[in-house]
Image 1 (cartoon, helix red, strand yellow):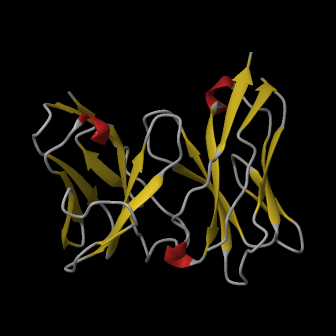
Image 2: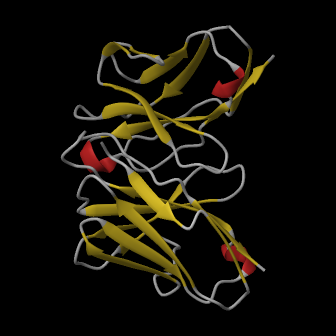
Length: 117
Length: 109
């Protein structure tokens, strides 16, 4: 159980465009979704936490208007990087909370590498 | 939330046992200790989890002393494919989502 699908795996875009990343929990329902960002040779940094049907909670220093999170259903959450710039180039990883499966274990998507030209 | 400290990097020869220690001095009573493995350009993958004493599964063992202020991930007979970054996370339920620096393990032929 706990299969997480994240799409796309790699995206290249021009500066100023918006990019949407999808994260799906395929065999479980996730009331909570965690979004991380990882720069090269660094650890994962939590960006935001979203609960299904409500607004996301952003970590300090993360611009909520730039990183739009939608968690409209128990199996799908999206992260939209608006007006992307080269400094937004990073590896983005989602982690739906599989509360009913294994209480203290997190399952992660495969990640999306964003390259902004 | 319990802060974790791990060595930044380790090297090991193929076939040897590798032990990676994580310090978590302010671990709370209800906190679990969970280790994840991450390969480049992939999401982290669950390895093992424990609360106290010793836990073993098909890929690793986790040793936790009685005071629970540290834990040691043991990988038996590592191979080149075990080269990765290993993270320990401490928390309860949905509260263990802050990653530390991790330990970059390089297995040498």
